[in-house]
Amino acid sequence: MNSSITLNIGFKLPLLGLGTWKSKPGEVEAAVKHALKVGYRHIDCAYGYGNESEVGKALEYGLKELKIPREELFVTSKLWNIFHKPEDVEPAFQKTYQDLGLDFVDLYLIHWPVAFANVDGGKTNMPKNPDGTVIYDVDTHPTDTWLAMEKLVEKGLVKSIGLSNFNSVQIQDVLEKGKIKPVINQVECQPYLGQAKLKKFCEDRGIFLTAYSPLGSPDRPWAKPDDKELLQDPRLVEIAKKHNKSVAQLLIRWQVQRGIVVIPKSVTPSRIEENANIFDFELSAEDMSTIEGFECNGRIILPMLNGKPRDGAHPHFPFNIEF
Image (tube, rainbow, N blue to C red):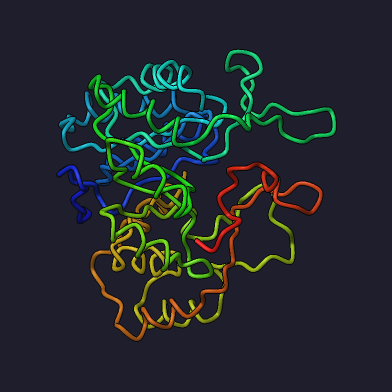
């Protein structure tokens, strides 16, 4: 169904995948099953989403009932923030490994460079102080976590490893101190936050970007009534009409033409199918340039607390520099 990119270790990764963030228990299994039925072969998940056991059931269905060869599936998961201490990395991975029910995971990412405290052996994903602030682990450096991730590759548990939400300085530190080069940096990417500088930085070093929330994540928990709605931007509506496509299809196509992996989330069968129907048209250079011109550093996925970025005071908060 979808074209692929070749990662720096030689593996192919489908440019289009199904995202599973915010897919509720009871919905995500059906969503992944339907995606696999209609041709998706790339599924993006994470321990932090709290639904990997259901994703695992759907993957089992794909492998056994749909008889999809394992080598045709590409499954990504992520290490959650409370497991950054090097000694916690493999036990955390083993939980994901067990829930997904696979012989191996294709790609494992550090979900955020920001470490949270592991207050109770991994039972509390978002440890909080009485005032609602997060209890952080400020002593564990993300590159130390990366060095522990490399051991998962050496043990054959993971085919490849990468990053998520890392800035250019953090990536460079990983490259200088690690033995294994990241294959992916997964970041928010949509026309208001096109990530052109980070994209060039990564690609110059053999690292691809994956775009999460490519449709603007209209169901994000912290959305305010007066926030811009990317899917309703009249400029995008006009371009989409020209191609007889939806705005969602336009946004996904824009990423694919940029060589960026894209993982739109949906649990609605018709939308899952619609999101995949983007390989029968092409955007002109003018269309691409117009959409790139929407750039306004308009980050949407930024949890807030008391009017400030929730994790902004953490020493490894990634968004305090330009890219």
